[in-house]
Image (tube, rainbow over all chains, first blue to last red; front, side):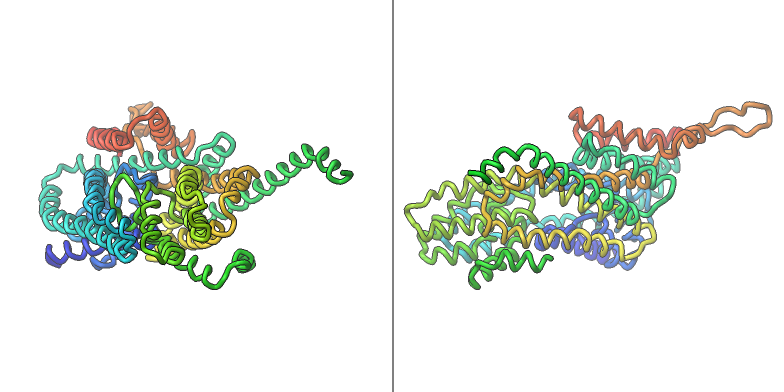
Length: 263
Length: 284
């Protein structure tokens, strides 16, 4: 595959997963696990795409678009890492470590592009003032096309110009640095997990984190088995809480109930 | 059960209402697709989504313009629960159109706005914090073998509950109104639901920490006796608790984040430390 073809297919994968995600109800097509698979499929190596997507998913687990603020943009990171791994012969671990700074750079770029929405404001204001229903649809889709179109073009040039740079850099990189990148890619997941724990941590339930950790580490239970065990435990606790709640309500209520009954 | 719930919700609705709500449901998938004006967040997408209601209740151009301008305010709710606000706005716009001139239109905006905090809180925690984490935990596990089933399973586990919730929220908002959300909070239903879902979420995060964070010391102690093999320090840690180092590092990150350390700085810091330790041969 020529450089141009790789860059074209990679940017197509980027558009499908990123623009598609927001056109289909934030269906999570923008998550590395899907982006990796789509990029891999288009570049003819779905296996590498899925494996790398899974690894990046773990790294970017914590990076979700909450309230519009993110620390990293996983889509560009995944597309570039998978494209370089497949076309420039970059090792998977090195490609993963490379993905992290890419995600950070593209995140700031995304914030700038988001501001493009302001250019559409006069059109939007006019549509509101005139009650023009059709214009509302046109503005929404034009902004979508322009915003993701610009991003896609940038990805095209990043892959096109970047693969030669990456290939050259990799050829000259001392093996110790490659080892260091491997260590770094194993560690970065810790930040993602920590971000998730900040969302979920709760004094009452935090013990279950360690149950999940130990079961996976010592028994090598697959995630689906842990999900089933967790769901059963959660449902049991939920019913218990519900009963307790009802008892509390019943204990607090008899006076008014009697009044109702006799009154 | 779910069809029972659906027919219960649709019982008092006309064919036209149902058609309108279904259209709002489908249009809501695009609520964050495009933006106009960063001061209004997703207001454009909101108007886009509830257009079936606004077009229906305000065939007159001036009244419709008034409604469009009314909704030109900051909007942001997790999209698969935000349809509740859309259904509610639709029902309030309907009342306004029926009692035009005698209805407090400010309430339409203020109630929508007051829903944003609590509803996003539940939506983010349930869907991003929990459903997505469970889906990803399972899919990451499968992805190690490179099978395309991994992303497919991921999409299904996330999107089936997400679409069901989005659908019922549209109808609940239209039929139940704001009291429903207040009651759900007061009865403790939401708290219990969030807590139980959080248990599964935390177990999955524990599992992912075990499988996806790795750190091994490469340094060895000099042999105890002459001729014996050098002892790897990592071995002591493994005997203590498998994965105790990655676990501790994860907790260190958690601690730093809760102390307000910036995520980007933390990611870069961890990466640089990893590269240095690897280059020096301390870890590998």
